[in-house]
Each structure stands twice: as C-alpha cells, then as structure tokens.
Image (tube, rainbow, N blue to C red; front, side, top):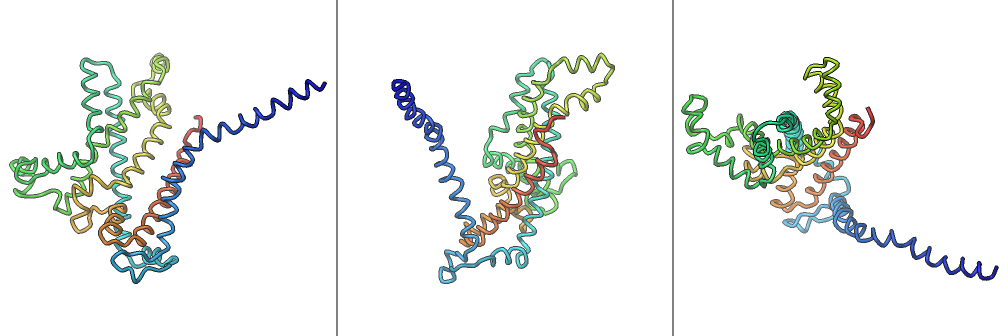
Length: 305
C-alpha cells in the first residue's frame, strides 16, 4: 500500500510539469501577438483620443472624442474618401471575382499548352504594386503609350492623359488593379475546382443536366466557401490599398482617387497630425470589422448546404 502511494506521489510532479508544456510552446506566439498586434492597436486607439500633432506640439492634450466629432461633422474629405473606398472595393472585388472565376474554369480544362496558360494567368500576382504601377504608367503615357494609338483610332484626343482626367482616372486605376488582382481569385478558385469529384459531373450529365446547370448546381455550391473567403480577403486588401493608387495617381486628381488609407497616410505622415490620423485609422478598423462579421454571417461561411 505504501509503495503504491509513493508511486502516485512520484507521478504527480511529472503531470504538473507536463501540463505547463503547451503554454510554454504557445508563449512565443502570444508574446509576438501582443507585441505586433495588440500593442499597435491599443496605441492607435490611445492616440485617437489625443490632440497629437508634431508640427503643433503646444496643442497636444487629451481630446476625448473631439477627433471623431471633427471626422463625422467637419471633414468632408473623410466622407469623400470613404465613399470612393466603398466604390473602389465593390467594383474591384466584383470584377476580379467574375474574371478570376472565368479564368479558373478555362485553365481547369484539359488542352494543349495548359501549363503555359496557367503560368501566364498567375504571373501578374507575383508583381509588386510599385512595379505594376510602372508598367501601367508607361501604358497610359499620352505620347508613347496606348493613349496614342487610341487617339489614332479616334477614340481619344491626342495628348490626353487617362490618369489626369477626372472622367477616366477611375477606370484607368481599376484596369491596372484588375491586371494584378484577377490571378488571386483564379489561383484560389482553381485549387477548389480541382477538388470537386468528377463523379458529380458525370452523374449530372447522365441525368441530362446541361453545362450551365452543372455549373449552377455542382460547381457553385462547392465553391461557396472559397468565394466567400476570397472576396472577404480581397475586399480587406482593396480597402487598404495604398501602394498602387499612391504611386499611380497619388490620390488625385483633386482627391478623386483618395481612399481612406491614403487619407490617413496624408494626414499622419505628411501633415504630422497623428492624433487625427489615429482616429481615421480606428474608424476604418471598426468599419472593416463590422462588415467582415456581417458578411460572414450573411454568407453562412462554413455552413453545410
């Protein structure tokens, strides 16, 4: 009896030491999240409640909700940038989804040169935003780019610059971002397309289902979660798009292509008004969080159909 109790006592310390092991293993990840995620977010929220302008240090003080009051009631550029951001995200994500799905369906078929076609479809995704801008700036050049040849056809005026014209700048920026963003959807949707059992298509064909019916009743239901996740991720990225628009248009002309993140960069980095810039960032974060949760709930992500 004594030997048995001694054995139980000798095993207890090992159990206690073993119970700490999972916490020790996840400790580096927790510390990294606190350092690179929680602390920056808390810092932004803190400064959003302050008057903190490096160019006017004598005005630095606790602001409370004054920055948010200024944002919602006294700053028309905030609403203009938010409206353009919503328009930009809606147009970009919708077009990228449709074109990406079409390309995924094409390269999913078996044909000669499919590997080369896939490489060509996916290659723009590997190009950085700044390099993409360089390519499209050359294409939009009014003297040596596509604009000159369109003018030769009578579609544009000679010397016209699509990026400087308020009537064409939005379409020009959308086209440049489409070239880079469509492969993202093509890659994700092609990966999911290849996981659909061929038996489902064969059974549908035996039942007399046409190609559009097979697409609607077999392909789309299987792609539902991939579409929801990819559109959400892309919407967040397009909402935070800075590199392409900043280097392509700089937010112009006349703030016509200024997104909310570009406005934040202009306010905080150029004007050194970090308090108001933090308030703008906090508002953008809350907007993204609200619509992300709402989109996942309405889309029933992960629910079985």
